[in-house]
Length: 460
Image 1 (cartoon, one colour):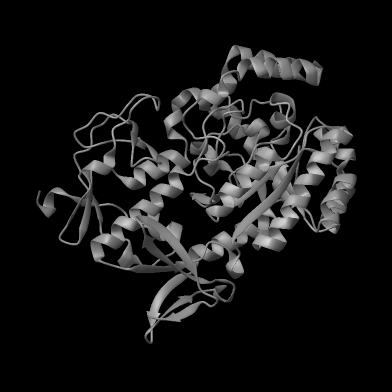
Image 2 (tube, one colour; image 1 turned 180 degrees about the horizontal axis):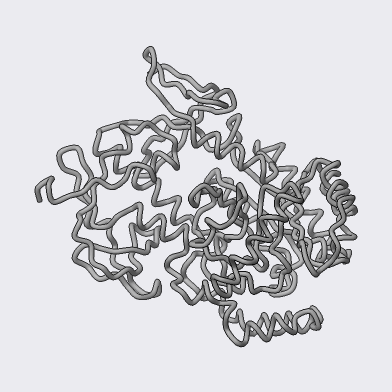
């Protein structure tokens, strides 16, 4: 096939993710005659994709055997030729396009509306029973992969590997993912759902502070409880953060566009009033196509895997990513409510499994622990065990425990950094480069491995 029958795939998905020089990311091309139907396909054994293929019909569901697009790879004349668009596939995963309209409009069903109308009158026991019925067989779902899905991260790595092979490059320099060369990142957040939870926040901060961990408290502006300035000041005075948690937590934020725009105007006003940089929707409801209406720096509403949430899906990455100018900081671990009340698990075994997997991939470990659900001594003991585990990861594994605003600031700073060749060395340049570390991506036994340098400049 001639070069004219191919079109270059955008370089940005690799340079944005790795912050590597453009010259290493521009050799992947895509056959333009992609079929119009989007669906599921595989790329190797560990990656499930969603998008269009050239000359092959993708599957309607992720179950069963999937066409492996890796068999269509060709490396010729210094270029990689693919039968799909990797940028499209990555965006579809991050934006949960594979869920279609069903998941995004999940709050519109009559059953959901009745549930949220009656929810304030229900005991936790009744809610648990109804939620367990709805979530039965959750563990049989093949995609996204439980307990952490790395499909988008794996696809980035495979594309860089192919680009390296096409150029004959033994290694590629890039800006390490976290400041000061930290191995990974962890973030604690607390969604405050009731007056009882609000009144427990002081005690919760005592627990956080006892381990030297600061958290983000997401506050509901209307109806649930009063939000006096003294309450917000008390949280900030202790070094914790405030974010806006929906408008009134009734589960209807995304019911329809007109209502959403009315509500989001008020939500933005509360963001300015509270001095909050971030937002999280109630119950992790979301429609990423509407995020441009928010006037926040970051959002925290998208889970990595959503098998145990009312809205199914998941962004399949453990790294922050931009949706326009809004930074998405995904939730990458199970929430305390489904852990305790759906799985009836009062241990940190699942959290430890998730953190181990994410640490191995140098990603973000993010948590939601509600003050409302850890007042009970049994649940509180589990939360304290989680704090101890995070403190251990900080000391023994060099994990950066950060607030959302710090992650947002770093990720924006990193996005503007460049790796340039200067005076026979590779160097990181740009504002904040003193916090950055140069790293190398190399191929070892067919997989990508990373080596971190101690500085931001190294000889070629």
